[in-house]
Image (cartoon, rainbow, N blue to C red; front, side, top):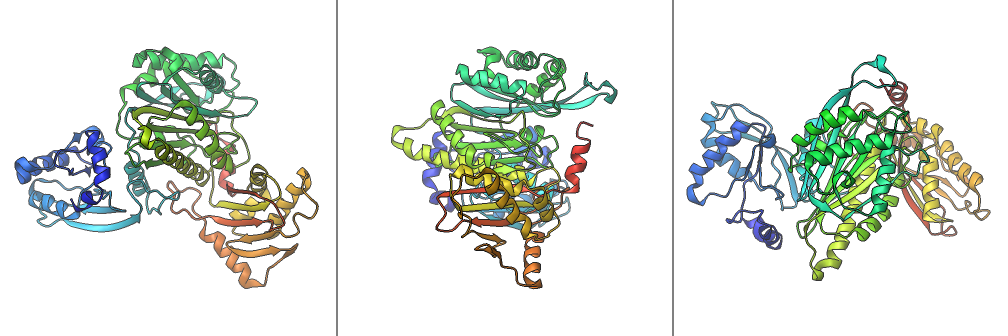
Length: 580
């Protein structure tokens, strides 16, 4: 109650949306067992009687929670409830408790057995930040389970959204000898049609059929009410009628959801093998109906996991605005990533009522500084899509419009930048992420970004990073190659250029500054400590190989930050047998 009093303005906003109980306090638990949830519910009734805080029970995924509120379950209350009823609680482990709006995130590991009279609670981790971890960088994780639990804590869907996914099989017409292959479909549905949506698509000259459908939807300006995403087959330049296949799947979604505007209010996306026909019949008659039957309004994590292909882990970022509105984004992508006005697949959901023009403007601006500033392998996909949809469930008062739109843009940038970095860290075979910062470039910000791309896409330098080899000559060569090839820059503009690696100056005024074995070891250690396992199924840390390129005061005003991955043997292995 002390924490709630400190956050009274936020509480009043939540109460106005009927999301908090009348006592001004809710107890919220993430549980792995529905049985445990029932026991604790009954136990709380006995303990608090008529004055107990309200429990809102949602049995889906066996989570007892208050929708869209922060989790406020104190250690003392855990001990009070569980110790008294330990004799009727079977053994279980891993209750994750998040305490907010206090500015800390705490994860507890609790073990109770039927003979325990005093349950033990071990404090495992506390991470600075509010309930949405409002840092662009995630905290470190020690296990896949901890990472997924963290994403689940972040992934509460905005009001008005539902997600569902399902699996199926198909036999590719182009390669029937491969037999039945798995395929997934993910459906995101809104409670009502929305005119407030925006999208950005690939500029690849061989776009997939879903891109063509999406561009038409955007040009027509009609409302959307659903997304449908499939993996395994990208529906690009196939032998059949790819657009008709995409529309067939959209029609199946519209019919199952009884959408008033039909298939035109469904935006399709596909990712996977290029050149194969979309198994539209299997998706429409089997997988999509199962995905719609699985729709739930609790969390976006399931959707983030379902859209994965060669991704090693799901990617999800979220922010909550001061009025309680949510901005939640998911993404997939691990290879064929050097986006041009988009990334592989990324979807952002918000319940803030932002009009279509403002959404499109904000998205286009943010994409340039996030998704367009990354590269895994220098290859632009034929299916790149970024879409944002508003359910309009949280209105914007005229008196707060300027502040809330500013907050929304900041949140959108944070979510997109975070997802973009996650994509690189999750790249196929990636074991290092490079962060290249360019300052005082004698050209535009776009040109500065191209310099950064030249560095992170250099096969020689990527290999050096993979081996923790501070081969600084390859870095300088990549920059010089760009300046020589593309020209247009004043002669001598590179004369004052300074290069840094791991914060140490390695090149200045046309000469390397390398002073013996100690420097070599320092640079190599920096790269080593930024590394991680190329098979890791979760991001163990958020470290980067830090590279600085500064053209000096005599340069210009161009600046950019670019993220890229190294090049490992695992990348070759993954892409040598991608289809199978």
